[in-house]
Image 1 (cartoon, rainbow, N blue to C red):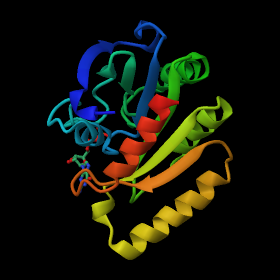
Image 2 (spheres, rainbow, N blue to C red):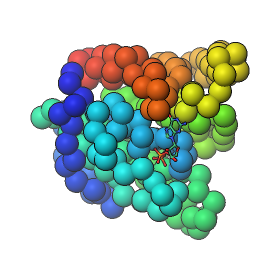
Image 3 (cartoon, rainbow, N blue to C red):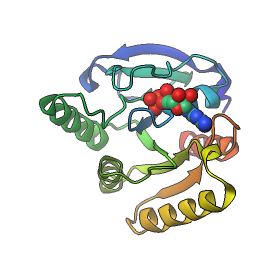
Length: 196
Ligand code: GDP
């Protein structure tokens, strides 16, 4: 798969407004500021396919991108932003779990976590949902360039141990948009899901 040809399709205000549930899609999720937009731009080699957030938590739209006809990347809104009202958070969690459980075309989910603060409650909740819904997970420890090699490796091993104990189909890797490290693994995992 050549991710460089990825283009924007639409912004959906909620998960009910998503395009037809056919083909294969891969969702990207993470706390606000985890580096999700940067990762999407790095993967697709485009400077501004996904908007990197100047104001965390501001974008609540679901952005839909197409890699090729019928093969989509879904940029889910960042979660965990303190200023979002409790009611809005609850509603979002409800529709997100509905999406994960009912979306036929959803083949896998990429969960991005800042390597300096991985495995927060909302991350673990989302991963548990994915496991329960039989959806493959690629957990990316982002901004890996922010840690030296020792702590980077030990954080990776610790996260692997914790996440693999949840069962399911989970892979954990480090990633840096800045250094473009981990890109090969991401491409091959996503390509594998698409070809499945
Ligand atoms: P999003 O809210 O998850 O979409 O996060 P963004 O992609 O907008 O990134 C949030 C902040 O982290 C921005 O200031 C980025 O420049 C920074 N950032 C993203 N990826 C990396 C990375 O790989 N290394 C470093 N050092 N900073 C990064």
